[in-house]
Every structure is written in structure tokens, then in C-alpha cells.
View 1 (cartoon, helix red, strand yellow):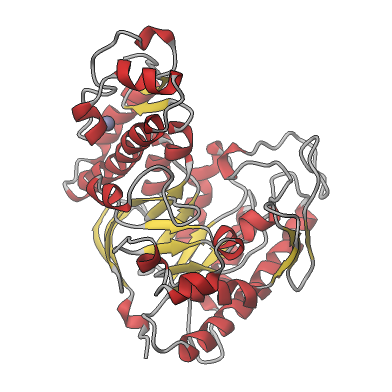
View 2: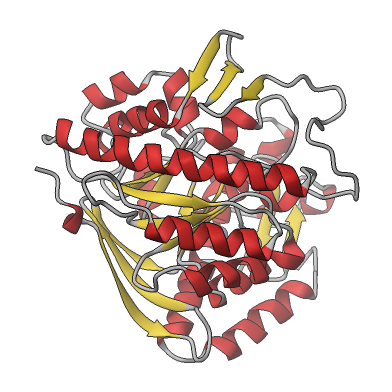
Amino acid sequence: MPDPADTSFTIGTRLDGRHGRSGLLTTPHGSIATPAFVPVGTKATVKAVLPETMREIGAQALLANAYHLYLQPGADIVDEAGGLSRFMNWPGPTFTDSGGFQVMSLGVGFKKVLAMEAVGVQNDDVIAKGKERLAVVDDDGVTFRSHLDGSSHRFTPEVSMGIQHRLGADIMFAFDELTTLLNTRGYQEKSLQRTHDWAQRCIDEHERLTVERAHRPYQALFAVIQGAQYEDLRRKACRDLDAMRGSAGTGFDGYGIGGALEKHNLGAIVGWCCDELPEDKPRHLLGISEPEDFFVAIENGADTFDCVNPSRVARNAAIYVREGRFNINTSRFRRDFTPIDENCDCYTCAHYTRAYIHHLFKAKEILAATLCTIHNERFTIRLVDDIRASIEGEYYEDFKADALGRWQGRIKTP
Ligand SMILES: [Zn+2]
């Protein structure tokens, strides 16, 4: 019988006077020292990079997207393979999202969380120019059309739980409604109630599936906190989800902080949530990857993070270094035979030059994506690892001042 005790969280060192802490999140497929960055492998692969390489560069866990794997190859095939970890030859912990974000943003043209900007207009039917809405939400679930072939599908809390149980990740997320900063306050309230009702259905279905699938390791379920930029809604969502139990008495194993966030209120929102959430449960923040965002989120109490950006921008020749971001595609790198980052310990920086990588992009060689993804993922993982070490070594403030000083200098071409 899968045992919820197979997933646990212990707190290591606390930051003085704040919610931030280091910790250890243990799952049936291994442990994650937190704070930790979790790279995204949307379709059960971090694009262009071997799982073995992800391990070598220090990834402790990977996150895949339920929506994409449901459409292709199908959750039943991943289940037959023995779950996500075995299917993709990644021996460590895995996360899946609920599919809600992808389904509800289908075709609408909005980017994930921090990229969204409220423009002062509030409208519940807003979509990006030139896009067609492919998803319709009602109180029971979401009907949507596949981005692959236009076929019609329906996700409900029970469907999302069924898919995520078959995918077999160590950590799953409850199915929630995505709102944007453009929605009205009235809609946010209504949506929060819907997300609350769906969370209850998720935990009930999760209990049922845990019993039914007793041959599989325990899968932890994280609730997702919505409430956009409203303090009272965020706090209420946290209290309600903390108190929520399934019919057999199960509570949530952790919490995801989701939805509409902007850079300027990221710290405040994470702080409100962590004021209310139980201290002994892990907290995941969805979708951040910039150095200043990590510091703000971590000191306010977030433990784990996922984001597709380090690999996505790498495929467009954008490189992260301590001094900022630059594009390796520009002609000044044609004869630059130095590594992309002298301070980096990744395989790419140990063996390849800027001139060579520049050439690969110009020649449209796919190795360019591999080499740059290795570097950007390593940069991001290492930054969060270094933050963790600074919390444990009690030099967090000094490390932050140094790292942000370099980053905010915005030296594009070191
Ligand atoms: Zn590197």
C-alpha cells in the first residue's frame, strides 16, 4: 500500500526573521535539498539534453506537463512503462503539473506568470490579438481543443488526477483555474471558489486512486493557491486549503503558489501565503527563473521552483551569466575563443568556445541548443544551490548583495 509517509519534508536552517529556510524534501524516487530549481521537461524530455546530463549538472528533480503527455503519447503508455521516471530514464524525483495552465491558456496567447502585464483594463473575456480562445471553463471543468490536431477534450479535477496518477510523478498538483491580472475582482472571487471546490474533488479522487493503485509508490498531492494580487483572497485560499481534508482524512502534502503574479508583488504574495501555510509543508512556486526573483521568493518562504525559460531561451542563443544575459548569435563572437562563462563549471564551458557555439547557431546545427541548454540549466541550478548553501552557512545577505550587484549591473557582454 502506498504510504504518505514516503514523502516527507524537514526544515534545515531558517533565515532570521523571515519565512525563508533550507530543507530536505524526500520522495519515493529520492530526496531534494531545498531551495531547489526543478528544470522542465515538458514532454518527458528537457529538450536537446540527455537525462544523464541533467543529473551531471546537478538537477535534483524534473517537471513534466500533464497536458502534453496526455495528448502524446497518452498517460496509459507512460503508466505501462512503469511511470514517468522509468519511461524517460530519469531515476530521480519527478513533478507533473495539473494540465490546467496549458489547457486554460490554450490559444489565448498569454505567457506564464511573470511575463503577464496588467494594462489597467479589466475584462474577463480578454484574449491576445489575433488569437482564438480554444478552452471554455465551467464549474465542472474545462473543454478544450488539442493544439496538435484540433480534437475536442475535457479536463475535470477527476480527469487531471487520473492522468497524473497514471503518469506516476512523485509530486502532483491539484487542478485549478488559471486567472489573469486582467480579470475583474468579482471574477477572481468566483474563480477562487471554483478552485477551492476543485481542490476538494482532487483530494477525494487522489485518495480513491491511491487505494486503487496500491502497486505504485505514493504520489504526493500539492494544492495550488490562487487569488491573483489580492491579499485577502490569497490568505483565505491558504487557510481553506490547509484545513481541507479528503473523505478518508488526507490533507495536502504541500502547496503550489500559482497564478497571476507580477515582479513587483512577487515577494509580497509569497510572504502572505507563507504567513498562512503550515511551516512543515513544502511550497512550490510556479514559473520563475530570473536571479532577482529567486532571492525574493526564497527569502519569503518558497522552497522549489520550476521554469522552462533557461532551456527555452538557450535555443534562441540567449546565455545567462552572473553579469546578466547576452546573445551568442551576434557577430562579435565570431573569433572569440574563450568559454561562454569563465566562472561556470559546466561541460559546455569546460570544452567549447563562444566562437564555436556562435558558428553552430549560424549554421543552424542542433548541437547549439544542446550546449547552450547545458550551460543555462547549470547556471540556474547552481544559483539556487548557492543560495541554499548561503542560508545554511549563514552568509545569505552577503551572497545576495554580491550576486544581485553583478546581475543588476547588466553587463551584457562580459
Ligand atoms: Zn557553463
